[in-house]
Structures are given as structure tokens and as C-alpha cells.
Image (cartoon, rainbow, N blue to C red; front, side, top):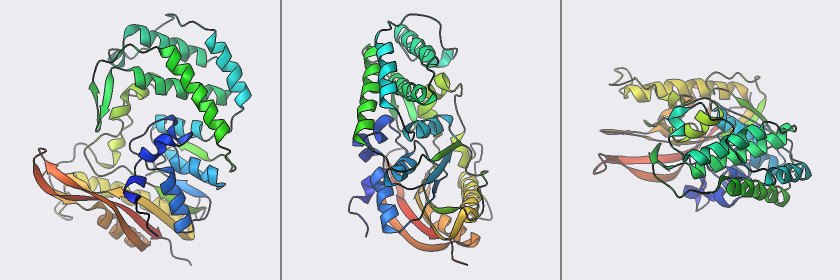
Length: 365
């Protein structure tokens, strides 16, 4: 049965009130409730794989449902957040470290090397962030260290003089917010979340890897729940340049990946814009990897979005279904979650872009 609020469930918004899921806002993701619905509606079997795991919604939900899962993402930030959100923690150890941090007074002990990112902060705030960054590195317990670092990464995004708009950062001056108060307050909230949620499942396996190249063992996965980057011109890591630049020494991880950025014009054979052709060439590799990894009878639930180009709309769902069937998948369903206008220059309507849920199955032998 299709839920009435499916258009909302395929967004990250419902996670803003979910314990642990809300630790790091990731606008490209879907919700915990979507994963729960998919598992129940389609009778998905474990282990469940998410090859574009983002910040771990599939993985954390599976853990909370008592299901085994595995995920990977090309972004070091996403892979880190996914792992931090899905580990088992000793709350007592966290509170002991928190008390130590309460007794510290931040001072200037050095600076982040990334000058381009530094200009987006008040100098004192960034000095405080660097102080805590170095102190977090001294925490002996690796899991507690990761939790504190995630809290600091979240705090950093909140105090930066930017706002995230669409697929880019827009510079905007903010009031000088106290880093120490926000950072320690975030850790406290994370501890409260851990006490609220008792995850019964085992910890998922999480890797930083490219879905186009990962080779999982054949017939090793019970199901797939995922959402690849949508067909558009956005570099998916643009709005995370601060986090990537400061904490991972990477300004970008080329998540525009599936749309090679220098591809322009049209492909004669497919009649597609070259940018779209590059996207589908890459997605074919991903679908092939999914098909090989799935057990016979295993299902893939994939949330996809159409492409909005200046003079046309490319229906990604239909093209991906066609590619999947060539590989050997059987199409069980295509569920339209929502539709949005495709506009040129924000004034001229080109068409309507669909956001859909594809339900594919690897036939039984």
C-alpha cells in the first residue's frame, strides 16, 4: 500500500525529529519512515545494501529494525557520518569525556590550513573550532572520538557565515554564536538520543567507496534500498565544502560524478543531452553491480529524480527501468512520489520532472 505522504517520505525532512537520524542534516537523503515502509511493503530480506548511503538513513533504520546492512558512499564526510550514527556507544564514557571538555577553555593553538574556508568564519570562532578539533584527536576511545567529531562538524556548519541554498553556499553574516556552548550542547543531545533509542540490530558495515566500481560478492545481498544522485547540474558536495575542506582536507569529491561536467551538446545515438548520457552510462555500471550482488528474488528499491534541462525534461525513471531490464532486472513497479515544474530562467516552464520510486527484482533462477 502506497502511503499518502510518500512525497514527504522521500525527503530528509521527517528525520529532523528522529533521534540519531537528526544528528546531521543531509538534504539529499530520504526518511527513516521510507525505509521502514519499503522493508514491510516489499518483504525485503537482509542483508540490505545501500550503495549511495549518504548519512546512513538506510543503515541506521535497518539496525533499529534488527536487520543486517552494508553501505558505502564516495564522500568521506557521508561515510564518516554514517559510521558515527550506526555504532554502539557507552554513554558513561561519553559523559566522562564531556566533563573534561566542560572544564576546558578554548584558546588559540593553531589554525586550519584551508584559507579559502577560513574566510567564511569569524576568526575567534574558527580558532575555538580548531582547539576542540585538536582536543578531540586526543580522545582514546575511537567511537567516542567519532561522536565528538560529528558534534563539532555539525556545530561548524551552524556558526559559519553561510547558508545552504539549493546546491550551493551563499555567504551571509550571522550573529557571533558561542562555539563551546553549541558544541557541548550538541554532545548532550546526542547522549539523550542514545538513551531514547535501543537499536537491536548489529552494526552495519560502512565503507568509503564509489558505487560504480564496488564489487560485492555475487548473490550476497538480500535487497537494495538507495537513492543515487539525481540527474542535474549540481555538484552534490558543493554545499559541504566547509566540512570537507576543514575536516577531510577535500574541497570536493566529484559527486557530480554521474554527470561528467564537461559533457555538452547531444548524443546522436541516444538523442539525449551528453550530460544525461554520461549519467546513464555511470548508472548502468551501478545497476550491473546491484544485479550481480543481489540474491535471486532480491529486490532493489531506488528513489530517482528526472533531469531538468533548458529545453527538455529527461525522465530518468523510464530510462533507468529500460537499462535495468537490459541487465536482467524485472520491473515490479514505478511509483511517482511527487512532481515539480522544470523551469528555464525561473520564468519559462519547460515541463514536469518526476521523483519516483523504482521497484526492481532479480528473477529467481
